[in-house]
Picture 1 (cartoon, helix red, strand yellow):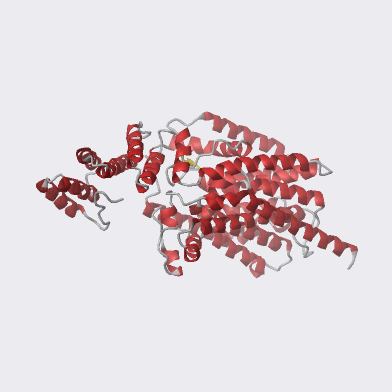
Picture 2 (picture 1 turned 30 degrees about the vertical axis):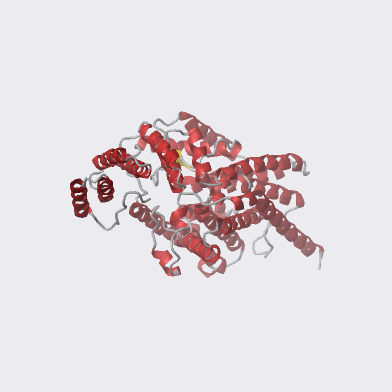
Length: 543
């Protein structure tokens, strides 16, 4: 074996070792997650659903308004293996996350080597990198994988879709780098290209946030691959045509699923000005969370009046990137990828009631982590960054450990949310539901009281529906406490707000029956039967 082959083999082994160490470090930090349970935020929908035919997952739209068949299959497989034991479901998630951490290292190595590797050399990912570069990549990937912003995607079992989407997204990028470096007569004759298509399709079927993948490839074609000059823009766009077709199809399916599930919000629910302000400020706000991850909330509501601070920070960020990017294209490419990956979840098309979410940084922060490794390797000739880097990782691990505890159960999760947003009706209702299920009716009643006393953020049909549901839930809790008169009053208010909700009439009928008001009970049952559609009624006292 000649010296060049020996060096390549050594570099390849160093890269695999760095990836393995990142995976092990990630597992070590997230091991406490195994002691957490389920939470009542989407977990009953995804994990609690019955195991069905594998093919049925491809035709299923969840009540949350999501179509992600591969994530559904993952949950069903876990349910077959682990049943209702949360330990096993968490184990699958942290193993997937550890693998993603290792893939980030390998992706960084491939991108670094792409700038210096001759075309069609057949060299492995990162074969030309020295030890310092691998150390920097390992530290950057570990900082990404153990950052507190990752906790929502990993510790929340329902966010398995994030982990699977990133897994296939990263595999697709690695396959694309191999395709771009190989000599082929045409892109459609490249087996690596069709691996890209397959992995991208799998990413879309895990979570539609991957729709911006073709744009990421175009950015990489410019830097570091420099394919724009070599192959021509027209050829590169033609090459991406199948990928853009998949993106458009996935986007249309996602919007249809959101409408079916009721997660899509019409423009009247959140004004266009508010959406635009939040969307414009989101890149700066997320970057701020990366630098200072506190506090991290599971449910970030749209503010009544958006703050201009995030918008100012985003504006300054764009200006700085444009100025620095003139001389350092790596900076411009990394932030362009960051912005493009975030684009589908900025809230321009409002899906769900949240304004921002930690999970949206899972994929989008990877380019910035790799950029940090690039800066370190170009600024320092020796591994002087190891000591401060290690200290920084310990700080991140400390914050992540505390954040994992917030997801221990529904009470811990929503209590943390309410500590910072005491008027959040969604959080109040969710914690009250948890208390109800535990038989802690007085505590549930207190949360319902607080939710109904909180000022309404917006006056819309959706807000009215949520308020009516809260009155209904409080009425059912009152029944458990034996407060039948108060229960009837609450249920009557729910009916006033939503007069076409059949289940509310059935509930009040049951309350009248317990009060021995037979005529009123019969009248409500007749109204309910007239309104009854396909959904089954929920009787008073059941939850």
